[in-house]
Image (tube, rainbow, N blue to C red; front, side):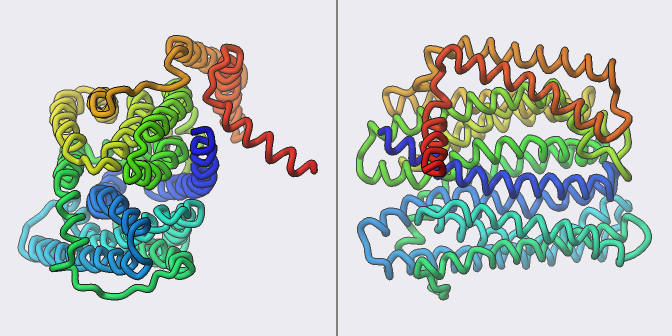
Length: 525
């Protein structure tokens, strides 16, 4: 057990480093985007158009397909030959290419007809034109996601995660170099960003191929229509696909509603989501990405004692760390948004709108990370129906909450609805998995839960008081003062939280400290 936990921390730590690099670069991309297009109606049209192929990516590439495929791939690895394993992979990729190609052709044909014959308002016409251009991104990024899943299943985490850096580099270049060459008005230049999205998807997929070739993989077309592996994966993925489709439809409906109420809501909320994704990706997604193949292997070996203990440890870590991140983003929302985005087309009013969305969304961070871990537990047990049912219920709750809250609270309404529905999702998944495994808790942190919550409260108060003191004494008129307004309160609050955890001997950092100590001793030797 100790060896498994240590390996989990090492692998997720390497993955976390790669994810941190890509997320930081992604944040640079968002800063460049914000300076270039602000949060007006053109920005709202681009953000909503970009979300739609991303929804299919999450459904096919990073969602139900990979969740169903990895356990089957791991089983082939353990019980079959390498040739059988790679043939199964090529069959799945061939099926993905065929299905995605059909969807892209239908979507682009339909959009072209609407644009040709429909008398549309300028905002809607721009939205649909950008969507038509970016829709093929779905295929490129889905293939990249399956390549990454195959490398994860083979024990590679750092290099696959670094593929996102290629995506971000290309997208940044599209803003700085391509967009200014397409016209003088923002509504014309924005098409440079759409072209950059396509090139970025291609770069991310190509980045994975050298590592796959080293593992022995060679791309080949394998007819998926009668392949037994494909049929098995499809049977496993259908319940999860229904649940994820409900998720993506829910996201699309809420964003479309927000765009109809006020296009600035979509862009402002998008910036808040990007800020949330930094800690969520570094901690929650990194652990979850490592856990799925690990848990699938333990399930295949019927080692449910270690299976349960691994999930408990993962839940404890993501909750402990992301609880602090939630508090800091809630209290320091406006200084953070001001530091990162307030320049160029992104002015003080845009800062207030995005900060409101971030403050209302921040409490959901711990819940979202726990949902990611818990869902991987079900997927590893080849149970995709339970997360599907819970997801659909929570999505219905979210849609109702958005409809009730977006009109009076705008961006804040979207954030509050997501926080409430994510918390309900985490609680229901935890209850269901606990019943399935007969026993499940937060491991070492369970006896210290009240103390952890009080430490989080103390960290929040410390951040608020020190942020007020900094604003009163120094303000935010220069870049240095903006940096201080974020990092001074953040450092004081984090120091209190982590020191309190060490004082009360909360063991979340124990394994990580042992790894760090071992590495330091090796360097000294």
